[in-house]
Figure 1: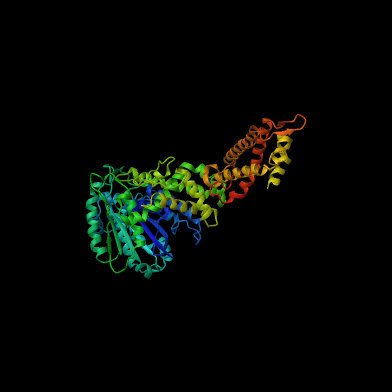
Figure 2: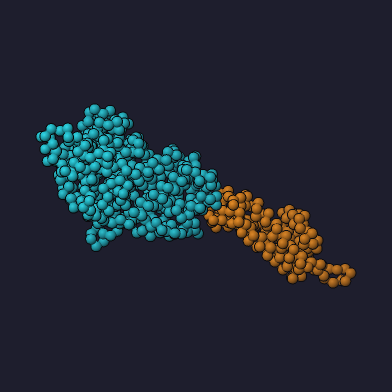
Length: 475
Length: 153
């Protein structure tokens, strides 16, 4: 069994990791023997709202996953991929950036006159005066200096120590900001060439993939802020040219995924900290599918494979909403069943928890799931995760462009959950939630074989929602 | 079988529906001498079995996995058996099948009243409660949605 090390650089890295965590909780499968991911967030702005939210989500995922045992008899697919936390809060420590200006970091006063002059050619006065505790604020020239410390830290040694044969690496970055644009090439270079780290031969020759995200949102114009979305395109062009000449041509990377969309939404212009907490976006969702694709493809070390993603029928007239029908078969096969299963579960927990946690649900009696169990910290963590999950779907839906996969307000009609697929009729005396409960109790009686209460609960929902998906939707 | 049902009905409820009706059902005073307890007993048992199967396997409704869900079906079963008990005896009474020859008056008379038939209906309903409970205990285990009824709040 292998691990996938995922470096999420900058705010975009955190947001893509958030989408990936949601997919893994739904049971989206990683193949080629990968059963564990090791998320590593590289962001100098460690109070960034996007980062904190993702860390909280992944911690909660771990609490749930740690209580589950995926033995052969357990057919549960939810939370099956393990998340491994090597670094505290999954976050890479970037030293000497707190409460420091860039000129203090590079120690300009100690430089001789010639070097100072060179510094002024490469960095504007604003760059030099820039405080680094909220990241690099769209300045990759700052990031490329500060992030040079990556290979020389204890964190990197810890990561390298845990690396094994067959493990893969994936890097998430945006190309139009500061942290991601500068961090990706630096990190890749370190991974490919650094000889002073443990397991360096394994790491230097590992399969490495990356998704680089081109501009997909704007920020509102703010003269006080250093972030200006009118520079996104020019930065992207420069960075793409750099990647082409220094990464792709040198075959430093095995699979490179490019994602872009015409920016349709302007976010508030927050330079960082807790205020940087953007709603989940379609592009981040698709970037997470690139990670799954990287794991599931037979990537080789022979060449760089460049990947783009197409969505059906996107044009200005019908671009408002993306649904499952907009996806080609590969993406639909990857996502539709597991995400529908978890959404059915989340809606059921949200709307009918008092019933499904009571002894009236026969499945609970059969599996010995008591009302005390439903008050346990495990179930509370699960409820919290399902709340986050619905929140995430809701943000995707309300963003532009909208990813409208599921109806979250189904009320008493759980099978109206898919927005563009009508439920099929089934031969049964029961309908709606009565059919759902019937399926839960049926699988509890006939199919659940796991032994621990935590496993039993999730196995019951996993098997029942799979049966329901096959009967009602099966697209 | 007739002996079995007859013993139960008379041992528990003869005081309720009276010796005259009991004798008729035993076949002591009926014209053909047939034991009628076997018919009424099998109907009572059959209806109880049918209602229990309906509850546990046909309707098998997830929300009825409670003592009151089971109780509703038990009451329906008792009501059906109450009607059945009355109909079974009253139809014979009204048809004149319960008349016996009175040597003193040299006339056909009947000592069974309509009140006795009503009481027999009550006896049949009460017996069906026991039958429904026993059948429930025997068949509940394989029900998917209501196997914990009636022992569930």
